[in-house]
Length: 456
Ligand code: MN
Ligand code: MN
Image 1 (cartoon, rainbow, N blue to C red):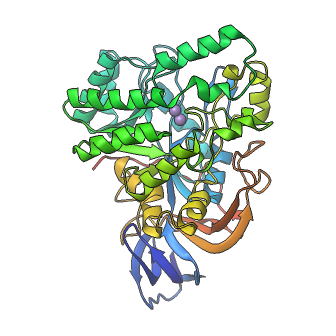
Image 2 (tube, helix red, strand yellow; image 1 turned 135 degrees about the vertical axis):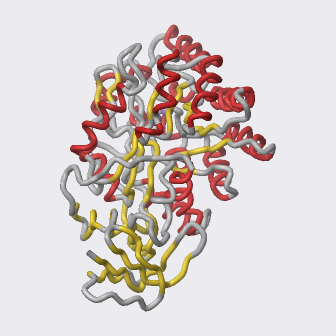
Image 3 (cartoon, rainbow, N blue to C red; image 1 turned 180 degrees about the vertical axis):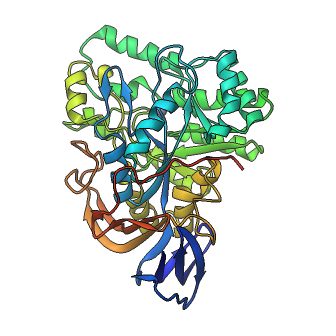
């Protein structure tokens, strides 16, 4: 089966040029001008950008915490991702039962995802305690195609400093990337307890107050020092939200340290004034939304390359769930916001159209860098001959106003409602197969595949 994408502007991680692109047997067969291939299906991409499919390496499509489950699940969540131009996700499972082994959650998620996902996916492992069996389990992750694991510095499954050093040493030796939720647990729990002792925790503005920027900055700084002690090993920091944290990362990178940083559209496009809105409870997510100065600093970080990845931390607890649990105590609201469908359009519109980043930077942030860092490259993440034909055709003039009705996420709100977007992926192709066209999902439940990842 062959498909020829003609007349578009091909945008790779490094260059953009008018070109045709031939898809053969699910892979990119050729990129060049005036390609011809008898019997190929033609897609005319005149006036559009032909780009690598988006890769979102931080999702929670299937999370369950404290008896509350996110509303979309793998099928609706992956379909929503596809409608927004994302062709691969890497899912972070939630914590399993106390004391469970390292494979418990990934095995469970793998079975469910295989039947449901409409796009390709990988899984991060999650650590919630450390002992000899868990450390041995880390060394076995690569042969299962799981090239990364997540460590929390807060929440019930958080690790202490000694355990983190052990995990970093073992993971690095095994070729496993370690991702960190970096917030200081003691600072957050102390401030939360103080607010709770005063009673009346109904103001969503208490959420950012309980998780100040210095809680993130302290954790980022400490992690970098722990990684030095573990033998100068690399670390990946998820959902960076503050200027203070970014300053520390910049300094470490200037010193030659291998520190990778990810941020998310909510930390770029929304700020803490959202908590003063009547529906401020919907913005309970962690880390919280920050000051506009932090948003501006993060945009600078994208522009100068200090931040490598834009992911989403998509976690679609519904507004109804948040209201039910959090109306009388905002600290009891399930945290997280949906965003898997809006990541690519938001970053294109707010970033490329507003000239904060160029087209190739857009590709690097949304596809190439996450693919390289999380072990999906060279199969995925860029437009190269021989690579998977995961491709989006983005129509740069389309204008849309974001609303939950416009989107396919199975959740009753979007935190980006009302934002005016210019540019949207109209055709989405995975391994040569059309996933989205004419605003329709064209593949069946379960069409996505588990991707064996390997850190190069
Ligand atoms: Mn997190
Ligand atoms: Mn997360």
